[in-house]
Length: 374
Image (tube, rainbow, N blue to C red):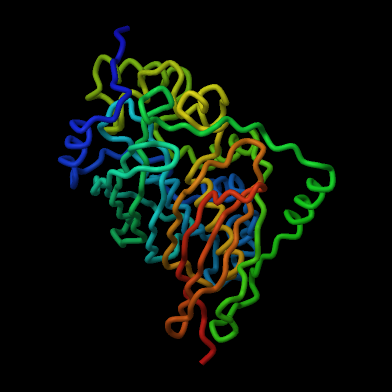
């Protein structure tokens, strides 16, 4: 099989070509097409979320919805909005998400998406001298044509470690925990606060109050396997015969690929996405160690919001910006605070995710709609 050649340096020509693609439709390869009992449960359990509203039929029947529903972030399992189009060979990393949700997703809903390339932005940072933020603009529809959500997704296109000015995190060993630290994490996990069926009314919310911290980790290979069981999330992950077919198409007939992502991802015998599970690949792309998935972090933060708002709440907006990688051995705490109550029924939240060494893994914001008594 022929070899695909690629450029490891980010060039002005690459950037110009990417800018010229703004507005082009993406040929999306969806993962989930329907919100079923199993697809919803796998997404939630892959995040560590065992809220009975999302899988327990008897509990959900007594809820305001009368049946199983999905958390708003389930739309990421239809399509993550994270892409690497053009700039062949320049590593994509998840950058962030700006969601607006219109309707609750119910069990049995068929879902599809219209995705287009958005604008790009050229930036510099502490760990890479020049990289690109590539965006997609995505609208999610129910089978009857109703719009259920919108996403502006951000992908960082960063030259890898061997490139001039490429990504250059110092390798970091997995954190070693004392028995007491692990016991503290365990107690936090099993004591997780969930509002559930107890209605949280808008009038009772106080500006400045905390969103209870929720613990995720320590991250390991099992964490990632469980997550990917719930969200394949990207066409970069292929098994056995499919991996060979995609690899062959990328080199010999890229027009046969069912999307227009960077063919480099399919042509490599070891996918650059393997950095999510393999330390050697993570170091090669410039990460400090095998690292978790950005969509996973977004789902964790969404989980913290859902726990706080309760079954009657509705997540209207969620913005998550990924700041630093969380690597194997890290534990991540997600939470926040109430920042404003702009009008009756609406609450604004400031959100964050930090690890055990106080690195800011992600931050963000949310708008939640709560019941009003009067």
